[in-house]
Length: 399
Ligand code: PLP
Figure 1: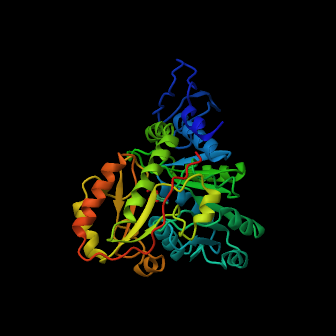
Figure 2: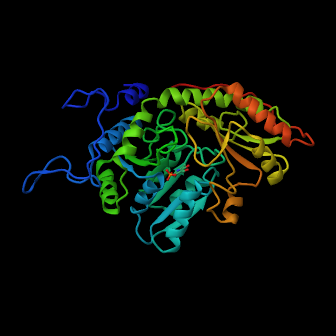
Figure 3: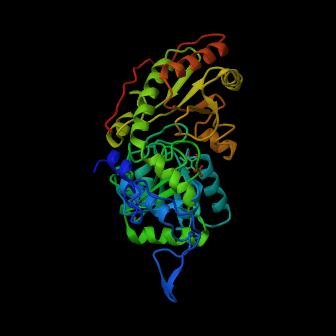
């Protein structure tokens, strides 16, 4: 089945008792034993729950994996994977990964739980580095947050496997509709399901999906042990969100293209970071490994923080908020919001500046979104300057 069908059909007609089309929600925290020493499928919701199992099955199928461990947040999923590491093991991560991930890795490594190395994974010497450093885990985030840098999952995975490294890909920015890291060679895929997978900004959740049952079992064990599994109600809502994932993503992408074609004509916009622009360094790799360029972009405006403030204060439709991937359009200032938890030096090394804004394009009418951006940019504009480049953004949608 195609991803679009898989996501709509997930759990449909699975109810044996009443034949409900949509699977019921099981909120019960515990389950009776048939007899002493004879538990049923489930005994306690922290370790297993029918509603959460359905979401896990759906995510596992969508990513082409064996199974999925559903967690209470994306960071819960990151925390789980940190438990695969022992003191002395090396975690090799991108220097511009999500700020919360960066903060967790930094602080756990300071406590001696493992060693961490942050690098720009788009650099030419990256394959050699993986092979010489022999990390236990190679962490990939492509496109990266917030600068949308792209790395070649297949190439990096091959190099990593030569030295026995486990490859983890944070696929939050694209979802399995646009990118399937396990098919490209990764061992584990991680999601903040808070984002596109749920898609309605009303659940915080996460998941880890793997192809090797033994590795997945280890992660299940840690999830139960640490108490990081997702709640039944959140799982129910997230599964509802999954059903519309493919059409939502199509709409998100269409709007993004229109918005970019407007933004590149506006004199306050200094730079646009979007892998769908042919001058983006990751354009070719993104075209090869993705089924669309997604709906996240970041822009730099002339005039730094002052102009950022003026522009943001005039926006009416875009909400100034963290998170991404919901049906509503959002804008965030990574320097003071999503990436504030990183040390300033690390932010600068990652290319995060005061004038950088990350946009998560929603599925509203694109004319309204463009009008909103235009009036806010116009208000902040004083001395127009030319754009760096003027290439056309075209819709790429192979969903
Ligand atoms: N990974 C990425 C790429 C993210 O953007 C986020 C949150 O923004 C996370 C992980 C963490 O997810 P959560 O906020 O659900 O804990």
